[in-house]
Amino acid sequence: MATATNEKRVELVRGLGAWASAAIVVGTMIGTGIFLKPAEMAREGRFVSIVFAAWVVGAVLSLFGALAFAELGAMIPEAGGEYAYLRRGFGPLWGFLFGWMHSIVGRPSSLSSIAAGLVRFLGFLIPAVGAPIFTLHIAVPGLTHLIAPYDFVFTWAQPLAVFWIVGMTGVNYLGVRLGGAVQVFLTAIKITSVAIVIGVAFFARSAPAVAVPDPIWPSGLNGGVFSAFLAALAAALWAYDGWEDLNLVGSEVENPAKNFPRALVGGVAVVALIYFLFSAACLKVLPFAAVAVSPHIASDVVEHVAGRGAAAWITIAMVVSALGSMNSSVLSGARPTYAMARDGLFFKVADGVNAKYRTPGRALIFQCVLACLMALTGTFEELTSLFIFAGWIFYGLAVVALFRMRRSEPDLPRPYRCWGYPWVPGLFVAGALALTFNIWLERPGRSSIGLLLILAGVPFYRYWSGRARTQSASV
Image (cartoon, rainbow, N blue to C red; front, top):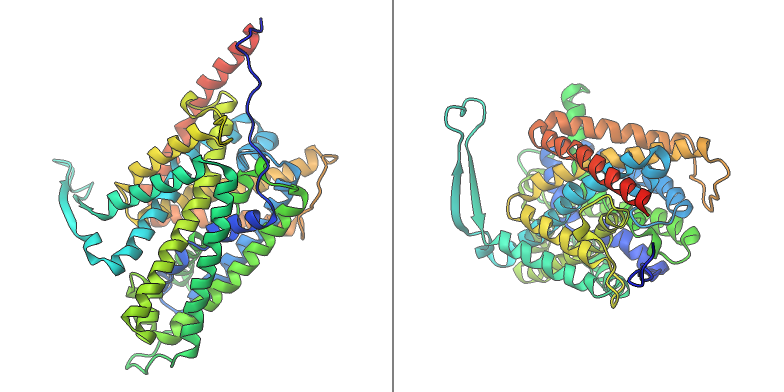
């Protein structure tokens, strides 16, 4: 029986226009990855040709994914993105597993890795940031032959990363329009900073000749070369990641039929061009071997050309760039958590929209707590690998759901249809499968932990869904 205490539920507001939608796509993609991943790609790829091949294939995969997600977003403009698509395409369990992965593993590891990258930038300006506070030696007695001892070094970087995560969560708690406006501003700064690095490098003298020339082509194609390419591709895809974040705030995008395809496809194309130019600029100024060992490649390029002072200014711009990526990641990341809690399929503490600011405040706080814990325990490279492995499993599954809904619901309104269907989405799914399998082979320990965390959601789903059915039957 209804009571007087049952009030009308406060809903999210469609406050993200065309510019804010595009800024979320571009702003999330251009964050820490482009400033840190080129060095990892050079180390993993070992050849210039493999590095550029990874950039190109990563751009194509991201563009194909964006084309498929544009159809999904325009067709089902709901909060939660893949959570909504998988529920409709495969059933509630699959949607839940995405939301569980996203809330427990995916977005906290993404946010914490962005924060770790931001603090690494600060380390160029203030070397003391990386100074150790204490070291914890972890070893399992009697099993050291199976589990190698590990030294966990706690530095000032970890609490600083927590500080930035909390700060950007506060900005997004105060309203989606404020978060969107901040995103447009920060995206403009980060694009400008990347353009400056590219311009400075291309107008500078080329790298001086070295005794050992840059390794351009591998001597032959074999399994080792293919493995190196996939490892470089995984690093590139972290730099490209973020194009799908707009779908997570689908219920807050104005005119989704037009803004989804424009923001997704246009955003990925612009970012791909910027990344390709940036990588070419770095290799023009520095030898390949120097790029491979650089902890902050953009700062090193500018310092090499224009001196330490100019490098300091560009590093400050990179910090702002990371803040922009973190802002859009925080803004979009809490929405699946909110959507599941709203449906009774997650911890109740994450449910509810703030009546004053019209934001999913509790879900934002829940996300912030988990991200802070991860920021205290992992490194940038470890956290990004965990995120890519977990995230791309569900990117691929969401596009498989697109195939399924084309057959099961052919009359569902589709304001935008994926270009190149079925080949474009099919190639995206194949690429996602190859990528996740290779990451598992390269990093079986952390990947297996991520997979176990995803599967741990099954008993939670059974409990929450059973409780929801019981409550519905009693009404």
